[in-house]
Length: 64
Image 1 (cartoon, rainbow, N blue to C red):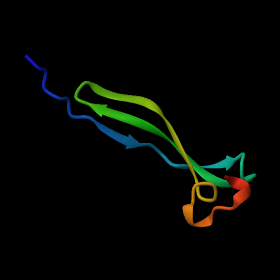
Image 2: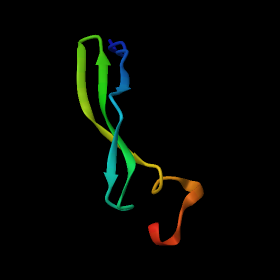
Image 3: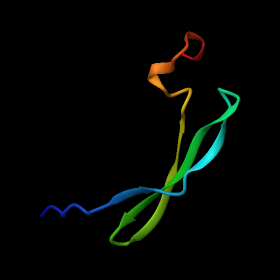
Image 4: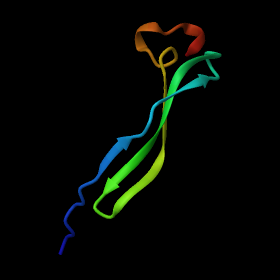
């Protein structure tokens, strides 16, 4: 008999300003990811995003 799917939620933690080594500026944000399940909370990793490097409307050929 198949097991029912568990309800899980991925939630970002506190967002912090961070140094982007590609841009050489504080243009990146980072945070931890928490997995919320019926069994409890687990930290599953981190995420990062740079407002310059990852902006598709502001891409320079040298960044590609």
